[in-house]
Length: 476
Ligand SMILES: Cc1cc2nc3c(=O)[nH]c(=O)nc-3n(C[C@H](O)[C@H](O)[C@H](O)COP(=O)(O)OP(=O)(O)OC[C@H]3O[C@@H](n4cnc5c(N)ncnc54)[C@H](O)[C@@H]3O)c2cc1C
Image (tube, rainbow, N blue to C red; front, top):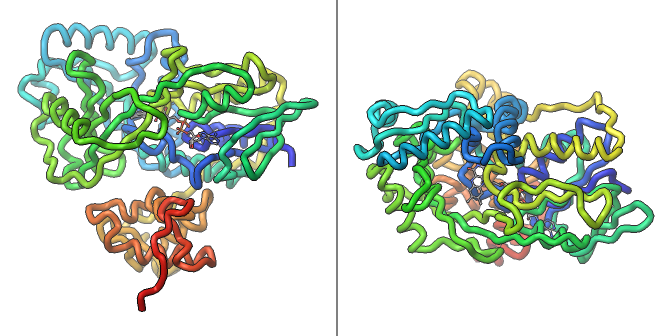
């Protein structure tokens, strides 16, 4: 089949773009190198839906951040994704930093950010008692929020697929040819044909661009984090940033949409593929975060992780443009922060570009914007849960004790679009294995369910695709 649009990369931008295009009568496929969606920057980031006071006025970042954050509020309801408008504070510790807050405030107003104000240190501490006595002022942005970034990506891709988009995983694009108005996008084993191609490959976007003769240089920057147990989530209710300055910028202390506490990230230039966490990085996080609050209980760290920013040496702004060398080819390059916040608006922007270029955009009357998440069960009342258990006893069978995840939710994750095919894919969809025991108790049960549902032996179940098998045979 020939597609109208082939999107390379199933991160939050590719997934939301696919969903946006399903509002029209179009044949769309998403080509993803890995075995699941949301395995690039969209998996490992801060999950902040930024207000939009940080990007410089007049940039695409400013425009799409503010628009994306506005769209996000209704989008998360349609997609049944965990989101909270918790607001953020940028802290100042001296008069010089306070002056910088004023600049950020002015920029925010110019960008059209709502619910922005500068408050005193005492006012900030009254709202956030864990804050340091040294805080003299804060920029309060009440319109910012927190979202689970991979949950959003999975839900967007699932909803796009429910509406007819196709997801082709394990499709690392290695070559692109163009002849007679048709692109052939190839991996080593497969190929698809499409009229339009969208390069949404994150850190790999420069390599995809080079396949059609476009030159960009991605200089990945790594960000390390520590994630703390849910017992620590209530330490702060707002996302706490610091004024950018000599102590580095961007180390935040924030609750996550799922109720954990997140501290990080660092910012170091690195190489593609470097997802290591280091003692030096984690020590740096602790030292800088201590300026905001000394009350983080690092004994409750349950995991550390790294995300890679797809910073582009050619521009500080998002690059969203038609290729200079190939027709009907859209480049999305340098989609670093605030890419998550901007993604809903980037999707609309790209759809407009396609329409303006002449792609027939006939409305799809059958488009269904809603999806019910397999994590929905946990949000129900006791009476509603009882009703569901009566209808399907699998919802009464607890599999993950730490995160209270039932067999019903795990089966839904395996059966729903985009289907979970590995232990980590189940974890991202349901949180089973994400609690303080990190899968010690539930892994064997989930392995059994994955094997049974896919009709494969348990020895073929993987942790994250490829050859990451969990078991090598039976002992008894
Ligand atoms: C440390 C960190 C913190 C951040 N914090 C925030 C934040 O708080 N708020 C915010 O708004 N933004 C934040 N961001 C930015 C945000 O995470 C990204 O802008 C967003 O996730 C980018 O999504 P994407 O879909 O463009 O890229 P990705 O999620 O990286 O997806 C690209 C996909 O392309 C695939 N791919 C690559 N090469 C190929 C190929 N050859 N063939 C097929 N597929 C390929 C990859 O496997 C990947 O799945 C942060 C980023 C980082 C790294």
